[in-house]
Length: 381
Image (cartoon, rainbow, N blue to C red; front, side):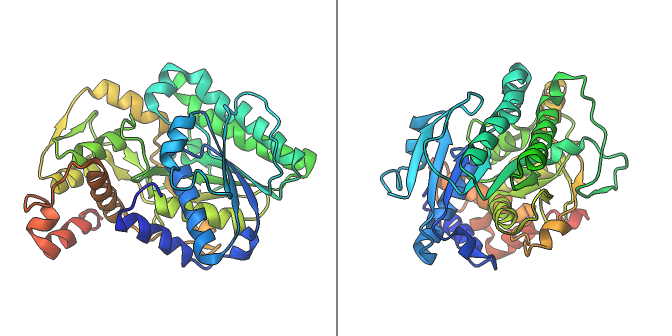
């Protein structure tokens, strides 16, 4: 597995305890594009844990562009008969050589710097990549196609207190380069619905809030990821902007749990929001202050113009309503405070950045300090 940390094991075990129709996975063959990403990595580890404890006999065909990265992430299962890796840039057409039952499209570069510098490539992953994977699903007569979309497709809510259901349409200026991500996700969704209409393909769509967790790249350029790494390194938390921007977040374990709910129980043709169950957006400033408390450091502000430009590529202030997903039996296991703390703890151990010393805020003050930190956001309500 990606991490041997007890929190990582607990997160995966908690998904196994979910009440889902696991029998629908028995003996299935899954093509997962974007397998080495933040979500893909955790998804693969979850499937192989389920294989172990439930004897599901699921085979995963992991698709990605970088075999060396895949070998590193999946070194424990690389030789497993139920795992195969295929080096494929999905923006390029290809005939997939295997029969598959489920196709999951999670291949998309979410690095803000790359989206702004290479917007065409960012768009094509969501347009051409979706088309090519839909073709594979059709040719294989797959049972279902799952497209990972984004809450960014809603744009900015018309009113700050709007709770965004799946039929909501917010404001999005398509005549800007920074719209490349959100508009191409919209186009990808339309392609899915078009293939369903024209070819009868079973499709479901997951609209994800901003996902974070230990499987993120440590050089991730998203503002939240950079702030988390500042906390991991016990540095001052650099907030590249005013910090007033609101974002909706979701811990990776809860996101993968939601994806499995959609894959196994979602209604054909439907879209589902996946976010913290309250769906409430938080300001980057609030998150930065929380990370500063964890690290025992302070928040500093830097380069507001650059920060606003990068943050707006992916983030939306939309408070995603998850009642449709909860109707499938899903519920969030970790609030933002707990998710961030678990992420920091795991990354510190993996990076060997944190010694088990009394300087750690959760070691220094014990349970009282942990309870105080976990209640940080609740006090903001």
